[in-house]
Amino acid sequence: MSTILSVDGLRKTFSSGFIPRRQEILKGISFSVAAGEIFGYLGPNGAGKTTTINCVLGLIFPDAGRIELCGRPHLDPRSKTKVGFLPENPYFYDYLTAREFLDFYGQLFGIGSDARRSRVAKLLTLVDMERAADLPLRKFSRGMLQRIGLAQALINEPSLVILDEPLGGLDPLGRKDVRDIILRLRGEGKTVLLSSHILQDIEMICDRVAILVGGRILSQGRLIDLISEKILFTEIVVSGVGEKDLAAHGEPLSAQSGRTLLKVYEDSRVPAVLDLVRDRNGKVHSLLPRTQTLEDLFVDMVRPQ
Ligand SMILES: Nc1ncnc2c1ncn2[C@@H]1O[C@H](COP(=O)(O)OP(=O)(O)OP(=O)(O)O)[C@@H](O)[C@H]1O
Ligand SMILES: [Mg+2]
Image (cartoon, rainbow, N blue to C red; front, side, top):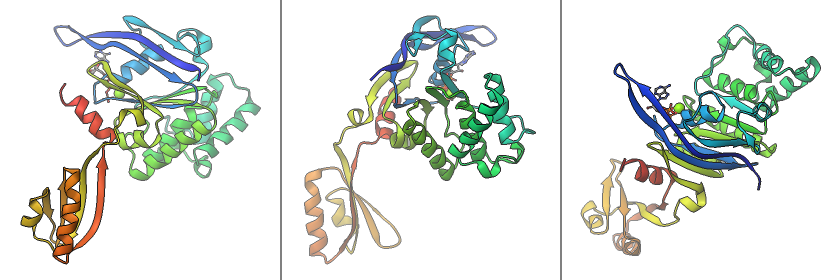
């Protein structure tokens, strides 16, 4: 598969404070995004995700490193026309309607009026906002604004769409809507680079991820390769068996409902728990082996820093 974005050895230092102190924020970042994939750029607050994106977009200049977009240096004007961008905290001009807002961005890209009209209509459909198309943006909820922001990032029909924290501040329904739109983009053959620290969302939609901690990429690859299938522990919910008896096999936690959640860390002990419940005429309500999640991997990497 062809590479649409490659970042190689990126370094960036900022000076800040009253007595300026230099701090290296990006310490030699390398990653590449292949055409047609959804690439998740993960990292804790302050890791340097937005700084990386700003370098890729040519908004700030790195101290060292190479960035190529569609096989050309990233500052080449021809590369930029291929990129769409939704910033972390987008600004929306409140008094425009959704349709006028998108039309305005279309004009900035020099798209003719007929093409603009049909493109705006298509994008409003893509983000499910036809019904609110003629309402001023000040009446929009955060979730609706985010969808209009996504449409704006697509106005120039980019091959690569860069979304900085597109799921931030959204409720679970809003997150699902935005996730679905991102998946739809991949369906249309677009490539998406998104930064986030909402790990479940990344886990659900990204093909590959890079994990940035302290200015370095500590891990990158396909999610299925990064996360091991190993069972970490098994959660068994039982009733009719005393907590003391269960404690011989794992960590019990009783609820008022009379049910006990038992965490069993040794796989080989699971059958013994089931035998115990049968002996006491108890009941097994659920049994759930927990494998590693992206969150486990993330916590393991971030904590030692
Ligand atoms: N222009 C700047 N001048 C000085 N320091 C900066 C500048 N821009 C960013 N930084 C610092 O660089 C670090 C990384 O910031 P950045 O915004 O890239 O992190 P992030 O990973 O996007 O975090 P978040 O998840 O909170 O958005 C922070 O410590 C920030 O204070
Ligand atoms: Mg950021």
